Image (tube, rainbow, N blue to C red; front, side, top):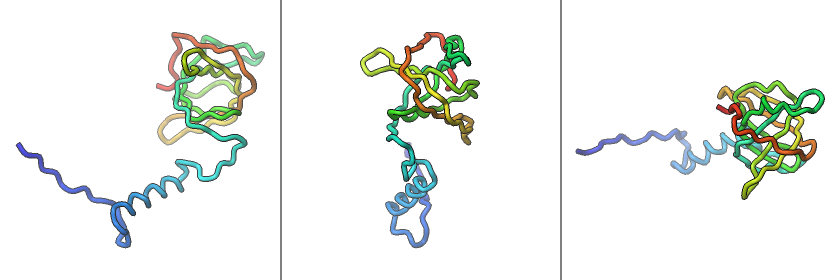
Length: 147
């Protein structure tokens, strides 16, 4: 039995210098298109941080609503805040985010969620500023907001 495949057609312009130039051109287009910010305008440097995070909304009086804890997916972390993705709208502006620490254990912060965008992939992209360190809230039976 033999397998026959046809060659892949590359997206190249007539002035292209080959496949490597075509790859470089497409990567530059991705970078210029906002997939990766070219100029950092934030106060502190962001670091990729793709982890599951427990998010517990806070009531108006600051009481954690532990029964409403959801799991979200963090995307980046800085000394001043956190960016994350979630699939359901959040009904809170302030929350406790609990993050698993390396080697076990948990750390937590109260956060002021500053912004939220609905993405073209039907997810929400949100971020906020840390207010202060807090007691972690980790529930084994949380409902997933990320899927």
